[in-house]
Length: 293
Image (cartoon, rainbow, N blue to C red; front, side, top):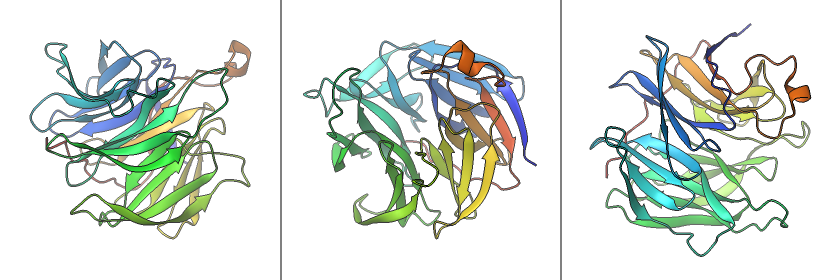
């Protein structure tokens, strides 16, 4: 049985983008719809919150200090000390029904973020894309034709990139060139059609296994590098959204959750919906690399 503890009862509308900073010993994460960045200190259980002007997509620590992030209007730097937000690029300025979503840094220190279509009441248009920002701050479209970018993670040797469009049940794998950041040979990694589920946020552990959060199903799944399901963890709330390893020894799996799209009746009986959870899963993660630009 997995030990699961709620370490921050944040009641997040849409918790996402967990990033462990080993230098500071803190976990950064966001609440997209609250436009909030949270800085959680496991040693003290203290949290600090920063509110930004737009819906957030994802964040990462920057080697030169502060954070790099995407908001609805593209790529930005954020200085938590001053509150300054510095725009970098908005590659989808001509797509007002899109916003940026899931992303993270690769092991070469580039920052990745994918977009999604979000226009309630309108038919879904699959015009979202996956972008890579290099260390010279140039932004490149890597792939397109998606509804909702999610599930981004790399194998330990950086030779495989995992990705999903959360408008469908398949997680894809690409061959990845760590030197250039280019991808090729897209192929199915695993398929959740039988479960009727989709993947949200994800990570890869030190053994090369892929961890996936399954929103609306209340599950965290672990797959081996061949795409075989190895483990299922039932969460105490039905909307897990993102996961990442952290802690001094990278042996804690932090999982964000959400309460959006849920009525009080639906949330009744759930434990700490919208909370940040710490799971003891018996394996270690891989250190994240800060953005080097």
